[in-house]
Length: 612
Image (cartoon, rainbow, N blue to C red; front, side, top):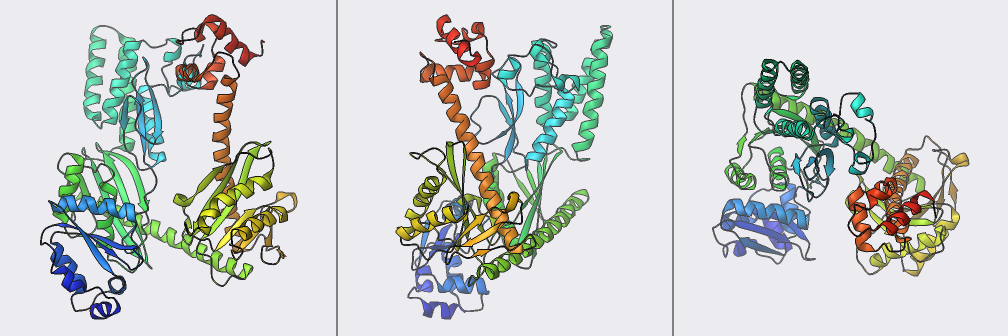
């Protein structure tokens, strides 16, 4: 109860609320240890804060939160929409315990059309949009991007090869043979015709397919009138292909930008399902599984999604919602500011749109059922692992270290983290290992563990309940020695040794406490969890090693050539699209790069062709 909450803390919430303005703003509830418990937005700060401390029943989540409040801080804003944006920023930055956490840490993919080339390339893109050209998206998944690219290649035959490959082709590639590229690399299409295809593709990706079809039909008629029957036939085939692909992707009767968002809740978990439509074209769907404490209402979960997701990503012109949410007008105003034009939020659509919302609800239910089944499996694995390793409770945080290198080159150590829900990718870490004898895995493990756990010994970072070391007794002994030196000898450490012939399911587990060796067998759920964590550590380490090795080889190959400094190296890599392009270039092509004279071009050519 609110009265009990006030007795448990020295903070007088009602007295504090009376000092607040009745204007809009954001409030932060802070515990004794300075942890931020909750961030909220209010149209009337005094009224909202006072409501938490008013006498009367609150649900268990609010009661627990209020009981921990030691102080409240507020930021006064000019408008409620401004408060909404600030609330979203603070939630993402502070990650308060009692707020709903969307966990949307994946970047969205885009389609990139690079305009600086005479024959622009269209490609999949993820990350910062700093390159020249146009970006289309964002798309909800890599699958949606690849599906759209597949349509573009079929209808417009734009190239997808890298510049270094494009510049060095002497005959059409397989993409041309299967009618997915017009082969500009060997001059089978003029610059003007290719530019027209690029313009048409942009029109398509902008969602103006009907306009594009009308333009193509006009061009076909003109070609026929001028007796250019070959051109007319090509346009006829393109129109047919475009009609076919648009029929696969477009929603009947819809031409605008629209997202359909539904929430499903069950057994303490929630799934938010979003269906994305742009220009009437379906871009697919995406599932979100937010984390939260207590049992918030579906409308509160949906509101948190709208605030956190669409204040980061550009919203569409219209959103169909499965729940009635509070401060709907303020959210619509904030999203309209974000988009730069009006955004409509519709909670009770009719007709065909009601069917789309029902589709989103069914999809959310199915995704949640699958997630609950996976969570149940994870719980069983954690319980079995606790029994197997004789732990006092199922581990809430598991960390695993692995080492990857190629004959000692570019050694990288990885640390992956799993919690009760699965992988926690935001806590993953890689360590570039330096200053050791190449191939010395013990020294590499020692360096990685020292760098990770020195911070923990200073009281920084999170403490794992279980530490897995990929390796046998030697690696385990090295890990225990490091932890003991840092005053962390009480950590639960287990070595994961490969089984006979490295067969999965036959690994042995070496207990750090007493050196006992366990063979759980391939049917053990606990071992399945260890395998999952270990394999993820291995994948993460290999990915980092390959990237580092590739970078080092690029640097070392060009750095070995007399006369190649940082500026010339950068110019070469930029001109040929990477080291492979430099290696494939002839002397005359190398001479086209600024700063490369004939003698140096011959040395570069000799470096890659063994003619020294």
